[in-house]
Length: 248
Length: 280
Image 1 (cartoon, each protein chain N blue to C red):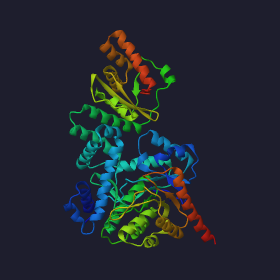
Image 2: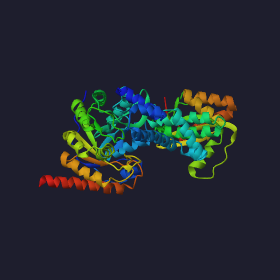
Image 3: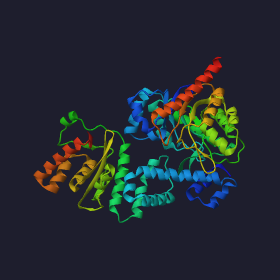
Image 4: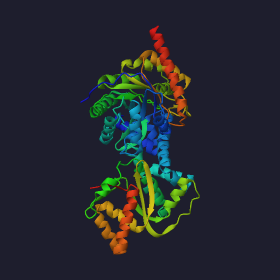
C-alpha cells in the first residue's frame, strides 16, 4: 500500500467507520483504529460544543448532539483550522430546522461573535480625525469585523438571556423586521439588534462610505428634517460604539 | 534560504493556556520560556495576538503546531505555511515545532495526529515536506514523536526514522517523553531503545505530560499530572541528552498554575541532580 493509498484509506475509515474499510489495514489494527475514530469524532463534537454554547443551551443537549452527529457524518472537515469547521454548522441547522428562524438567527449570532473576536484589528476614528472631517465629502469606514444580517425574531433577547443566565424568553417573531449587527471594539465582541432603518443605513455606509449618501437615504425614508437628524444620531451612536474606524 | 540553527537552550517552561493568561500577564511567573499552540494565534487580530505580544515581552516563546501535517502524501498547505511564517516573523520564537504525523489528504483534514508508516517512501515524502517548510520559514524546525495507537509494517523503527529524517533535513527533534512511554507500552517496544536510537545532539526540547488508560491501550490525553514512570524515563533521557529545554504540557482538566509550577519544579530537581552527577 502506498503512502497516498494508506492515507486515503485512513480518511475513509475516519469518515465512515465501516468494517469494510477497517479490513484494509489488516489484522490486529482494530483497537488502534477505534482510538483514532473516537479521537476524530470527539474532536469535532468538542469544536461544535465550544463554538455554540448558547445554541446548545437553547436546543437542549439531545437535539444539539443529534444535529452535531448529523453534521459530522455529512461534513468532513477540510481546513487546517477548526474555526472553519464551526462556520459550516449553521447551514446544517438551517437544513435540519427549516422552520425555526429564531434558531437560524441564534446560531448566526454565536458564529459572528466568534469571528469578530479574532477578526482584523482597527482603531476607532479618533476625536482629532473627527474634527477635521468635511462632512459633505466624508467617506467613512466601518469596523472590519462588522457583520450583519436581517432580524425577524427575538434571537438577540434569547442569546442575551442565555449568556447572562437569566430566564430565557420563548422564541417569537418581531413586530417589525430589523437587523442584527456584531462587531469588535478593542478586545470585546458586541451584539446589537437594530431597527430596519438603522440596519439599512449601516449597510449603505458599509457599501460606499459616503456620509452624504447616508443622509440622502435617510431623508428619502424619513423626510428632510427627521432624516438629517437621524443620520446625525446614528453617526454619533456608531462613533461611540467604535463602529466607525476611519475615513478614506 | 534557511538561516541559523536552533539554539541550545536548557530552561524550564510551560504551555501557555487560556486559563493562565491572567497569571502570565499580571504576575512574574517563574518560567524560562513558554510554549504556545501556533494555530491558536494564526488569526487576523483580537485578544489572542495581543496577549501573545504581551507575553513575548516577558518570556521567550516557542511555537508548537498541530496542523502542519508533515507526513501528507500530497504535500503541505501553502496557506498554512504562509500564516505560520507571518506569526513566526512577529514572535521571533525560540523554536518552531510540529509533529511527525499527518492529518490532511486530498483536502480532508482529520485534526488529529495520525501515524506514519516508517517506510522509505514515507521518509522521502516527510523529508521533502520538511525541506519545503524550513525553506518557507527560513529556519530549521523541531519535530516531535507523537503517541501512536497503530503501528504499520515498515522497514524502520520510529527512532531510526527520526534519526534519518534529522540527518537528511537538518531539522531538530522535540522529544516527548510521555509519548515514548505511551507508544512503547501500546506497541511493546523498549523505551530505552528509543532513547538509545535517536541522535542526542539533535534534541532541542522535551515535552512531559500525563496520559490515561483507555480500554485497550494508553491514550495521550494531557489531562493529568506526569506519572512516575514518565519521570523515571525523563531522568534516563536527561542522562543521555544532557541539559535540554523541558516543559510540562497540559491541555485538559487544567489545574491552577501553581500545580503546574510544582510539576516543573520536579523537572528542575531531576535536571539539577543530573548536573551534579556530571560535575562529580
